[in-house]
Amino acid sequence: MSSVSEPPPNKSLGQHWLSDEASLQAICDAARLSADDTVLEIGPGLGSLTVQLVARARQVIAVELDKTLAKELPQRVPAENLIVEQADILRFDLGKLPPGYKVVANLPYYITNHLLKLLSETANPPILAVVLVQEEVAQRVSAKPGQMSLLSTTTQFFWQVSEGIRLPAELFTPPPKVNSQLLILNRRPEVIFPDVDQAAFFRVLKAGFSQRRKTLKNSLSAGLRIQKEGVEDACQKSGISANLRAQSLSLEEWHKLFKALYT
Image (cartoon, rainbow, N blue to C red; front, side, top):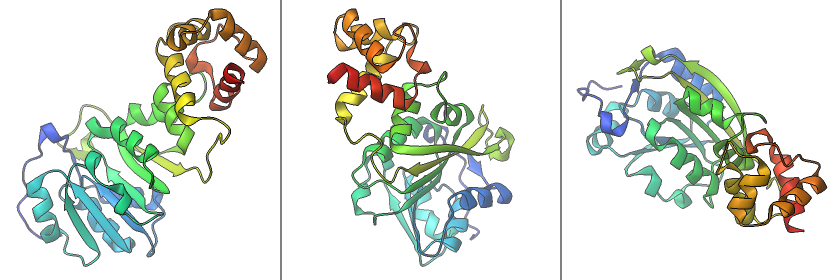
């Protein structure tokens, strides 16, 4: 990297610099990068991770919201295979990226949920996303039945989810208030439930999780505006207790319940 002066992190943009070499290499290792890959890096900041990425990938497209950092990144990381875009990633046109690209990023915490939704629902999704997020968020996204949430069910609908390394807060400058963890998302090669309407399926999920403390009988009845007896019948057909709560169900059980409600 070049010796361009370091600006102080901008708290409003959720900037926390990570410069630990072993951690940066572990992030790249998790992305299984090759010389054929195009990588989208989100929020490159000072370019510590960018240096690792340009050394391994065919092309790196770094999208940075901070105008000063975006302008200075090519000086910090002089590389012919680096393209820097000064933009808000939530408004960035992912359609102009080549199919099969990968996302590797140390994410600003405040955009995590919005970004997961964007990457999940875009018409041109990455085949793999390796993102550093709050430890709690990584655990929520990768949750198993019993601890499921709307975030975990909707994310796992599109991705095979796993957790990577955990990074303590003291490795960052400035240290955030919580630890971070690597979240690894492998895009499902095929739609998990091709026999359901996705929008309708998600409406059922949202209804189920809208009142987490209530049983399926009550939350689905209220959220979908149907009689409790209808929910009980659907649960009986699908072999699921109407007295369970939404967090107890696996994706496959939601699929069975959806089919029972609408067929």
